[in-house]
Amino acid sequence: MNLPKAVHDAKRIDEAWHAIGQIPDVATGLPKFGILSAVVKGILVIFHSNADCERIFSLVNKNKTEFRSNISTKTLGSLLTRKTVMSANSQVCHSVQHAKSLLSRAKSATYVHHAAAGPSTSE
Image (cartoon, rainbow, N blue to C red; front, top):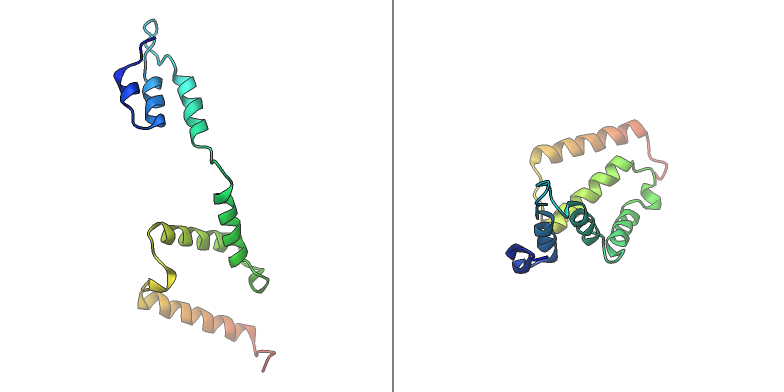
């Protein structure tokens, strides 16, 4: 079968398989290799190693320590999301400038939490 020029001119393999998936069947007009193209494109997105998973496990272990064993899954997920977004934008945590209103609310919440906990046993 003669493949279209788009398949031969594709710079990346996923672009080539996308073009193959667009080839119509002359009898039905539907994509001739649509399912095959979808399967191959699915295979192409499989990670080549488990390095990304290990990186996430490492981040979880750094955030959920014995001193923070009661951290909720939601909070842990939010921390990991924030860390990933900052890393993708080449930012470091100590460079972020938070709004004064946010810092004020955080300090207030800390004060309320400590007041509710009662006197410290380490005093």
